[in-house]
Amino acid sequence: MGSNGSKRQAADHYTLLGLSDLREAATPEQIRKAYLKSALKYHPDKLTFLILAEQSEAARKAKKEEIDTHFKKIVAAYEVLSDPVQRGNYDSGRIYSSSSSGGHTSTDSSTSTPTEDHHHQHQRHDVDDEIPSDCAPGDFFKVFGPAFERNARWSAKKPVPGLGNERTPMEEVDKFYEFWYSFKSSRDFTGTYQYKRDREWAMRQEYIRIRRLADNAYGKDPRILRRKEEEKAEKERKKMEKKMRKEAEARAAEEERRRREEEEKRAAEVALEQKKVKEGERKLLKKERSRFRTLSVGLHGLEKDDVERLCTWFDFEKLRNVCERIEDGKDEGLMDRLAKIVSEIKREEDENKKSSTQQQTQNENESNGNVNGSVKEERPWGKEEIELLRKGMMKFPKGTPRRWEVVSEYIGTGRSVEEVLKAMKTVLLKKPDDSKAFDSFLEKRKPSKSIDSPLTTRIEVEGVSMSSTSTSTSRPPPNDQKSASGSTSSSSEQDDVWSVEQERALIQAMKTVPKELSGGARWERIAAAVPEKTANQCKKKFALLKENLRSKKSSA
Image (cartoon, rainbow, N blue to C red; front, side):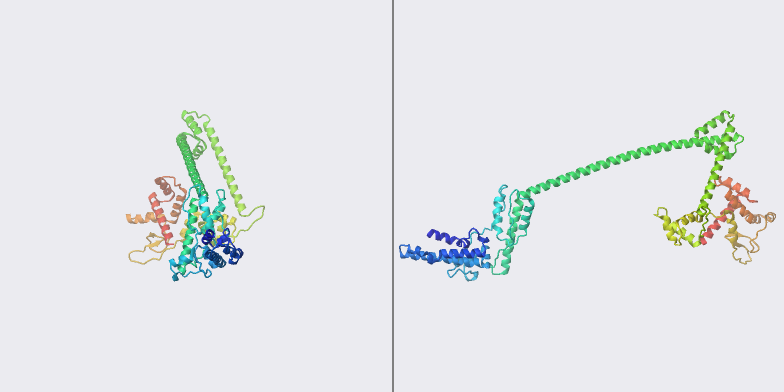
């Protein structure tokens, strides 16, 4: 019994009750049954035969003490393991009292010294809190597997996932490390530390220890390392593909840019060449037309308008052939053919003019609603509507979506789109009757009030100064002006006086004489149309009328 006694002395509570295979996994019912079994087996009354088997009285006394001590240890083990708090402290690897009075736990370290406690307390040696930090590449599961198994008993959450092996799916591996990184410990340090802050410190150290275990394993796990290498290779592959794709796109864009530049360059060269050709043809045609106009001076039967018609009708080749024949004197039948061509041109012009007139009449009839004999009355446009139409066209310029519908809604008088379009063409773009413009201007012109002065009796009529002896707007007839010139000053004043007939003749001549004529020739022709006025007088009068109209507009 000596050797067996020493083994039982060194054994822990689970071994004393025969639960060394279950240990922390043993349930309270299993602990109770194991205790009853061990108590029945090692009760001193059941082992009396061992005491009697001894030869001497001293040996029998020593055997009895040994049996009693072992039984007391069994009772003390059951008392610790049957109490949840004491069992939690015991499982946490703390120091417990095993006094001879029944094995009650004592946590009051202030009443005993370490030397005294060494005799009646025992330290569990099965609690291994060591954390592996490194391992060989092929020994990962051998080194870290048992470490996780040892610490799995402290988990408050069950079941605890296992470390697995090389063939474990990565989903399970991720769940394994997720469990240990969110580990909740069930270790209790109440029986070890008296103060709360010490117990909290011990719990923090416990979580630091578990976190270090998970970190060390995660850094050495060949499955995690293999996945990192694969992710790195995939990332590099995608990066390379992206780089190659960008380079290909850049090359394609550069090629497209060069192609467009070449096409634009070729198109510009072709356009320039065509422009040069057209410019050359235009110059040649202009030269031939000028040549034909010069040669046509000596031709009889061709008027100036006929010459212009032929210049417009003939192209360069035909015009050159005609000029060459005229220069060579081979004009037999040429004049007849030219006259025939002129007649044909005039006939086509008349037909075109007639067709245009008919088309215009037809459009006016259609716009006025005279279709199939039905007459549609149109509502006249008032001044306010015309002003709104003008503002709407300015507010909604070309390019506005549904422009005419928007303008019609802007007017707001129920005008349709057709009415708005017709009014735009007829009302806004209608030109006033120029023949009566100056008459209306003279009728609207009012004389300003005269100011009696001993020095002068001048009156101002629409910004024009005239010398008069009364406020009447009548002017002396031209014969009186001519006979009244007695001196240089009186003569110049009478030259500046214009009659109504002369002003009308000036306005009409300004409209009739084309602006294409040179300045001097144009004013000579205008002066020829105005009786008893020179070109300089007409020019001055026109400038004066123009200035009066501008001042009138600015004052309005």
